[in-house]
Image (cartoon, rainbow, N blue to C red; front, side, top):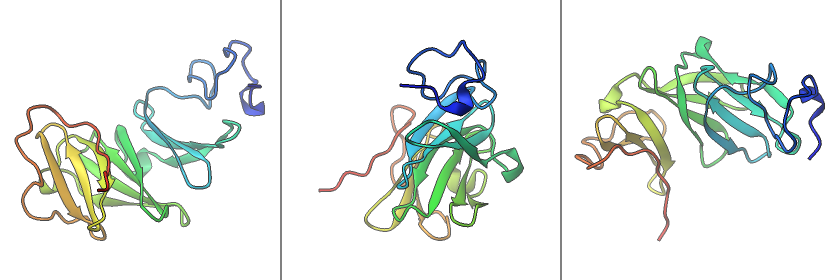
Length: 175
């Protein structure tokens, strides 16, 4: 795979590299926690140590822009999830135990689940279900929490509590 033009600043980038380390390119990554493709084909990457989420062209790996950063109250992004309609990007902010919601079309970010709201402690995997609710793994409390999809308000008691291990990923499974 040829290097994207924006990454030709360094001769030290190994062949086949899609997006290099920050050590090799100013547009590279420090510590990837999650990477997901949007419906338009762009790649969104949670870079925990840079405290940001960046987007890259899906076909070439060319850097597009920083989507969300510390100025948006992001602290140690961990997991990413697109809303079912692809309009919003949800970001688990591990450093302040919150979840941010980024409106892709408007390029604006808001707090979806406030810090520690509903017992959130160590946000990890996230999923939307067919019942219209938003589920998030709360790693440090060993729970799966359920929130309303529009307001981010917790839906009563934990959906699952007292897990034997720290939950990290969630996936919607349809019957």
